Each structure stands twice: as structure tokens, then as C-alpha cells.
Amino acid sequence: LKEGKHFDGVQKINACMELFETELGGSDSKILKEPKAFLEEFAGKASSEQKLALRGMYETRGDLLAALGANQRAALEYDCAASLDSNNAEILAKKAKVSTDERIQKDDDGKVPVTVLTGFLGSGKTTLLNHILEASHGKRIAVIENEFGEVGIDDALVKGGAMADEENIVEMNNGCICCTVRGDLIAGLKKLIK
Image (cartoon, rainbow, N blue to C red; front, side, top):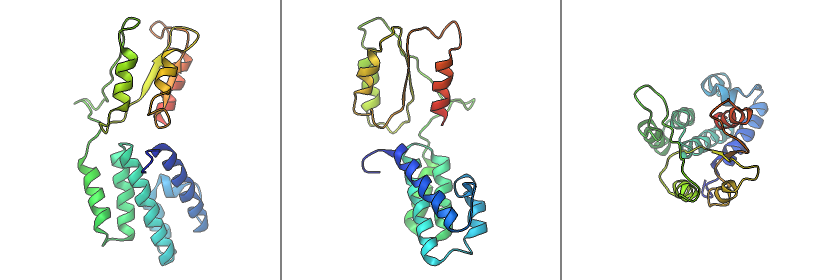
């Protein structure tokens, strides 16, 4: 958490939790996909040490997801951790915070706002984008970059920034996306959904 590599952290805690699930006799990643059902099925079989470890994993996963702005899912993880240690005020406080904190402000119709950044060569698009990516505003940002040339120039400038290790930046080369739906745009959007 301290290094800010939240995506990597989620992957690592997921792997740990899946291994822990097999130790308890479970399978199919139910510990991640349906955590409440998993706890109902296995909490009674777990030793006190296993319950403590499981509480810690759910709390850590909640912390990582909260840092990424996935507040609803973080609240579920904290709820699972609290069910294993109902007297832990810190977990309850974390759950209360993510339940009230809306980092992604949706419009009235439930859609996430999108900004299209465009301009002439040298107008400051990359500078503005880097400023937005480096600012500490607590929002999740996805970038889809459409390079018109065969060699990406702005891509190297954006990926070289401080957020390069943390953010997922999708580059599309050599073309316009306005006339046809391109395969790399679809692949980029699917990558962002994951």
C-alpha cells in the first residue's frame, strides 16, 4: 500500500486468498467471488488462527480496493473482515468511510463521465494529461491514447511519468477511431474493464 502499487497488491492478495481457500477445502475462487457464502460455509471449520489470517486478508483486500476507488467492493471486504472480528473498531471505521466516500461521481443516469482531450500539435495536450495523472486527487483515471502515426511519440512521454508503473495506459497506433470501431479500441476498453 505504501508504494502505491495497488493493482499489483490486489493480484497478490487474490493469489494468497485462493491458496488459503484450497487449504480450507474450497475451490472455484468462491472466497473472492462470493465471500459471504464462502464465510458461511467455511468459517465454522476454520481454526482461530485461520480466522485471524482470513480477517487480515479481507481487510488488506478492502484497503487495496478502497485505494483504487472500488468502494462498494471494499465495503464488502470490510464487512467480511468484521464478521470474523466484530469488536474491531478500525475495520468498522474503514467500512463506514468507504460506504460514504464516492470517488467516482456518476451522472444522474448512472454513467461515468468521460473527457476527450484534443488539440493541435504542440497545444499542450500531453502536458495537461501528465499533470492530471500526477495530481493527487483520489480519482481513478483511465487513458486511451490514439496516436495518428506509426511511431508513438506522446505514448513515450506519458508512460515515462511518475504514474507509469501504477496506471494502465492503452495506446492505439496509426489511425482514427471515428469512422470504424477498431479492434484495438475494443481490446483497450476490455482491458480497462478488468
